[in-house]
Length: 437
Ligand code: AMP
Ligand code: GLY
Image (tube, rainbow, N blue to C red; front, side):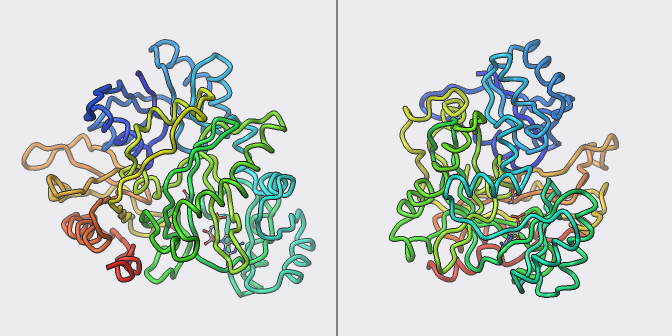
């Protein structure tokens, strides 16, 4: 199948890696994959095309001219720009919701409204459009305060703080861009669960946990995500098994949400990312996203044994119900993000990355690129120079029989990679590695 993958991060590199792996199986079936716009790591694996992934007409034109049979949309921006709508109108199978359903991620107020109508458990929230309303809501909810920008804010819109002045200042800042939500603080472990949806039924992937804060011990500012691991063996202590947990999320959260959107004539066809908190009072949704999570995808997909293209295509074509539940290996996966100096503030970009050859041939390890390109100049040996082009630069991913071994593999490789000012957390999956020996 000729597949176009839109996006340029490590998530898309992970999706492409999973799609390419299918070609190694007994059924063969290698796909013809192109990416737009991709990055240097993706370009080393598949052809990349210089296409504005956020331009519905440009994408549709490319697909029709080049006989692309299936489009997989990685990031949220093309969804919100209506790229999936434009493709679907032309009868082109696409994995990713239309603009209206993508508002589940793009507008937190919309998501809260859908959850309320579907009876989905989430924290209480008040939408404020003036500072006076925000201040009143902060007083009602009390500390710790949770203040969120309503629209897409590239991970910078959320502040959780016990400092009323900081909460008020955050609300004041984001009110310049639209509404803000003041939310009830939810206390507990966070879980990311991804479900494929064809608009009516859902198919669950394996749960993962993301590390959102920049610093070790969950200190410092929120980021797009600094690392992740999958599965979550501790879910069994609380729910009996991973399957029991997943089934509860399907019954109480995913299916009611998908059915609600279908009843509003905005079917959700794509990836329903359930950001959950396991509170003492039960599972609560903190957010939905309308796409694969980053970096959780980098640990979920390496464990997926069912061919990814089969699942994504079934979701895109309304036939998910005919598919068996996705199967995952017993191996675990850990990923750690290497970020640029000053991330998540104003990351220093353009710096050279070296030492990647140290990852070649290390068992279970792959290096996925998040923000890289190749410079025109070459090094002393005539090899092109790899440069960092953004905040999150690389993901080192390892699969292994245990978290301790996966961590050893990831950190062994990371120690050999050089990026001036580069930063990464050393505690990713440390606790779970201690617990499950
Ligand atoms: P979000 O962008 O909504 O995923 O929020 C980013 C992070 O802020 C989440 O991963 C949580 O760690 C934290 N957070 C968001 N909402 C809440 C909440 N209601 N209670 C506690 N923590 C929250
Ligand atoms: N890992 C968080 C996100 O993808 O939004």
